[in-house]
Image (cartoon, rainbow, N blue to C red; front, side):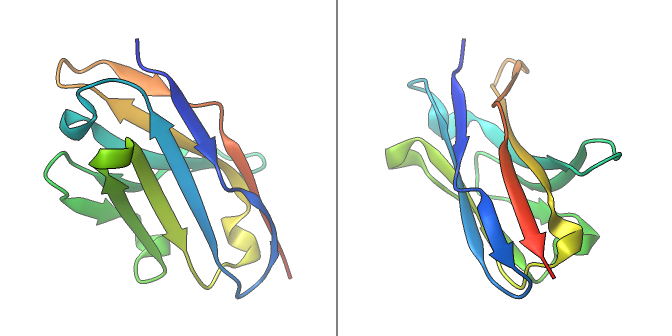
Length: 116
């Protein structure tokens, strides 16, 4: 079992920045693949960014150039730096952990609200 906890959400104005954090338990954190997903009002949950155990990253087109995913294996934590936020980024942001065995674990989500 992997325990996943997101933090860092909040209310910001358009153009501002936020950094989300995702802490995950387990001694094999460096082997996890991890991703950020978001679910806006009346929308399905969608991938925002993904990072592999070897730090390979990919992004949804809508956030390329604005968001950066990273990880600190020494702290068992993944981050999502979000710059130039717009109201369209308003959503609950979820962290997903995938273990080497292919098991998926989700956090409870953190709300990001961007006002215009």
